[in-house]
Length: 219
Image (cartoon, rainbow, N blue to C red; front, side, top):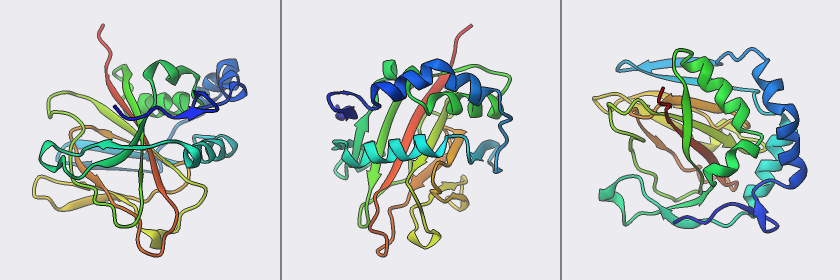
């Protein structure tokens, strides 16, 4: 089991940040219009990319915490690539309501699919550096109807650094690539074949991605 992100012995965010979320961050974010920067459709499955949903001060707090967090080599892309493990740190689902990124995540999910209600069932952070091997995979079975909300957590990113998330069609051609700009959020059908790319040699910064996996809520 990957280690949970900790902050001075507590959940990932300090008490003041959790309190700010409880005192109305959700309402503030949800009251704003949520429009994607761009969208793509691959084999009938959709991807939407959002920018500017997470306040910059919250983004920088999260980035600072992740730079001090503990990660374990416990995540795999597929069963056949299990010998190549990725660095990960779990976020307990029970902690998500106090996290500043949950409200904008759910607002984007609602904009992505206003006809359905989704609920998170897992959340975690991956970190990758130059030289890491990240494999293609899907996040769910084709008929599962699940979504992934993927945050890019960094203070800056140059397009020469690489690190894109690439999405493939049924012929394994790349049909979309998302650059990990600071605070960017990608929401996509979990059955889309995709892969993160590690940073290029000229990048000495870690590539942090924070994933929230969502399933359709019953009823």
